[in-house]
Amino acid sequence: MPYFAGRWDSGRSTDTFDVIDPVTERRLVTLTEAGPAEVDAAVSFARSALDDGEWGRTDGAARGRMLNRLADLIEEGTELFATLESLDIGKPGFEPRAIDLPQVIQTFRYFAGWADKVEGRSIPTPSYMGRPTHSYTVREPVGVVAAITPWNSPTMIGAWKIAPALAVGCAVILKPPEDAPLTSLLLASLVEEAGFPAGAFSVLPGRGRGTGQALIDHPGVDKISFTGSPETGYKVAVAAAKGFRRTTLELGGKSPQIVYADADLEQAAQGVGIGIFANQGEVCAAGSRILVARPVYEEFVERLVGHALNVKLGDPFDEGTTMGALINEGQVTRVSRYIDLGLKEGASLLVGGRRPEGKGYFVEPTLFGDASNSMTIARQEIFGPVGTIIPFDSEQQAVAIANDSDYALAATLWTSDVNRAHGVARQVKAGAVAINGWAPLNPRLPWGGFKLSGLGRELGWSGIEANTEEKTVTAVLSYPLPE
Image (cartoon, rainbow, N blue to C red; front, side):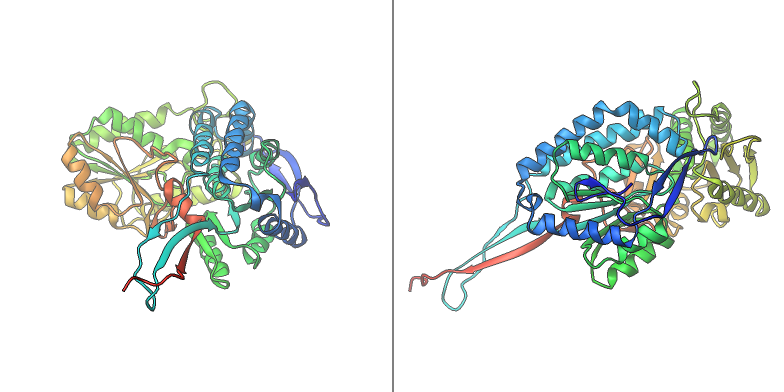
């Protein structure tokens, strides 16, 4: 049921959709979809809360206290959030407990600290027609923010969008993923408990072609923050352009992991494996292009295959499970099609490649070797547990292969040579480069990419800038300049 105007209200909508457990393929719950009337009501109430309501009058210190209280409530509810993520998405519970939820809590606390510290600048300016001037800037909330989140990590990525927007005083309308909306609905109840006034935060569950489309088309939305595919991101950008509204778009990647001959190969194999198989490979920054120096190629491949063979595929609630199910049948079909293309184009299937028999949307951890960067499995985002291993002969060739991509979100370098690490980091085209560790995310660091990976940045000070408008004020003072 939608949550807006400070209450749970299905409005006039009679449309519903089912949320499916990807492990058992059974229906978890049926939810009411927010229709155009509910979207319009939510946007109107959010606008009123900003312009005339309590939220618009709430100062930064109070916003910070609410965000810290929300972080406390999420921390207290960690087990419930982790359970819902496992049910909704199919990922083993240790992943949200170890990665997603600590990130969520850190993100809300980090931006709580910014809430009363968003400052402008005083800028010296010359006189105006013989009279002195006083010029300064202020940062004001951009307004009503539509936050559209993906199904792979809805709580964590939701926090990336919600926390900075609320910190600066925006009103947020969250459209959660139709395949995994449950933690977003739980979050709405905690936002209310944390003391945020009505209209500051809304959740509108529904499908992309219905609720999502109505939200991005609504002229009362001042900014759209979207994480998803480039194809949908293009539609969001077109809709936003009609009103010259602001956007932040994180649209995935085909991230390289470069393993040099001087790397700690066991550490690298473990880290590369995490970068491919974490969250079933359904990760925007998945390091699915593995570039390996030829002198250590055979040894590294053997270690990485061993890692893949040790992955335990199964029910996320079973002890020992290290990889769960893909989100839905369509994703299984997509991943399987790419595996077939890899075989057809001549890559060597080293391990995996099958869908196990029985219930659930499972695909085995899969590795292709002896591949080239021109193959489809090296060019397109698969969004599943499939890695493509490509040998290289020189540092320059490794950088050239890494940069030969339509995406530029993230990259990982594995080397013991600190000069090489920082030198290559400068050359690799990516929004974020990690050295000897895959995707060490932190709310203090800006996150985002370019090319097909999107526009803008989230987190860090960039998250504050992305949700504020800078206004210039110049006062022409009444007293004359001394002669």
